[in-house]
Amino acid sequence: MEDAVDADFLAWPPGNFTSNGDLNSNPSQIPSSYTHGAWPYSWSGVASIGWFHGLSTLNNAVFGVNADPSTTADASEELLGIDKETYLGAMFQNASNPKFRLPEGAKPSEFFEKIDPTPGTPGINQVIEMPEYPKGTLFMQNGLMAASPGYRVAEQINGMSAWQNTLAPPPYQATGDREVLKRGAAVFDRAGCVDCHSERYFTNHKVIPQQEVGTQPSRAKASKGFAENFVPPQTYPPNISVPLPPNPPVLPIPTDITPQEDIELAYAQSNPAGGFKVPNLIGLYLTAPYLHDGGVAASSEALQQDEDGFKVANPDQLGLPGTLLKGVKPDASASLRVLVDRNLREDAIAANRADERLQRVNVEGIGHNYWVDRQAGFTTQDQTDLIQFLLSIDDDPEVLPDSST
Image: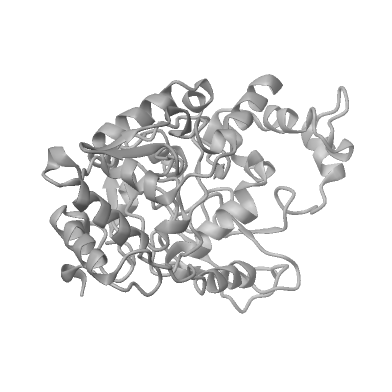
């Protein structure tokens, strides 16, 4: 078991992470922190209600709770089919910190009670139990909220969300002139990109079925099992201090800020394959590689132009095996070209699929087959103009498509 865990972690590409409890290894890129106007959150859109349109739910889940797997112990039997003692024992049996290492013959839950740095609450981190615990909800997916004594309910996670929503990428230093960007914006319109990547933040905030977008399917359905145990979401008023007083008041949480069909799709309830949310395009020049698994990647030396367009000049610097897995930074321009050109993408997918580590963790770089290449009726110059436009999308784009103005 230890060898299997090590092999999975060592197969994660740099910058990828997962805290899903679906017993599948499907790490995705850590999402962009340019979150303002980019709801719903997480790659599949599972964080979509509550404060900051779901951003506080995301921040709580990843940074406060899911990164501490001991918080799932009370629900491990129901969610994972693993009894609590086995779950905790597997976690502590070879802990790197001797304080947390399970002694031979000790009962895991009794040992945990003795060494728990936050006695009286589930898990190791500082959390409070929501009204529905140990059940979860759309708001707090495992029924726990990260909260430290001396703060008010949600003060910390809301502070994180408020700060995060002030972040914006540095202004893009355009390498082309405005006419190039205008031509690229026109290609963006003509290629239909604006159908999904629309409005101020280049997203329509929808969740798209996995079958439609076609990207690697494992992550899209990862939250299905959790949602099957959800109950209606509730919270405590934000003026209540932690630790909670006896019998604190409870408030229902509205769920209608996100369409029900998108919520059900994000959690693979209405469609067993699940879906992926439409990400915003702010700061693309900073966020290569692309797609949720990061499989669309190329170095600055991977491609070369000839009279027939762009070809792979250096196959050893294509896909994740040729970039992040060997310490080579993906180039935004080259990676975007791989994203929109089907022939280049085929080569990148082949490179990813030839790597056993990536196959272990469901990274391929497939899908999002919306092409801007010769077979789709576009010239190489059209493709280049589009890429220059995509790179230029910062927090205050110099040029917008006609359909977005």
